[in-house]
Image (cartoon, rainbow, N blue to C red):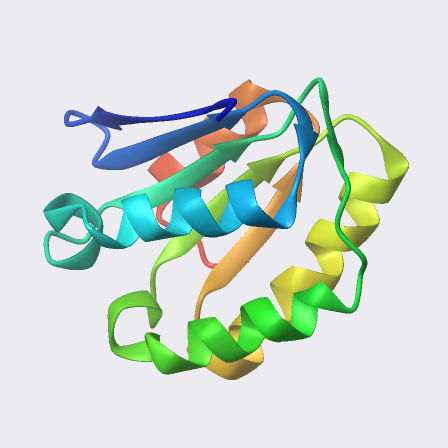
Length: 129
């Protein structure tokens, strides 16, 4: 798998980095690993997903499956924030679609960024917009 999950304790973040072509099975595996992390599920850590230098090989209709999954774990995600960093148009569009679905289905607040600095600033600010 071409992803890593690391903990940033001072910032109370789980940093998720994925490089290369992102397949549905890899995304599912990353979320399985994430949901096994006590920091994310019980200690209120937020998520920073860095998809720079990556390409999604997942149909957009899969966003609805992700939203259904998120709805099922709403007690964990409700009020949490995720910053997604992307550097291509398709990833930006897919992430923006997911952001809307995640907020509606799980209360999960996702914002899309093009730089690491902007994503980290937003997560550190505690802002929900």
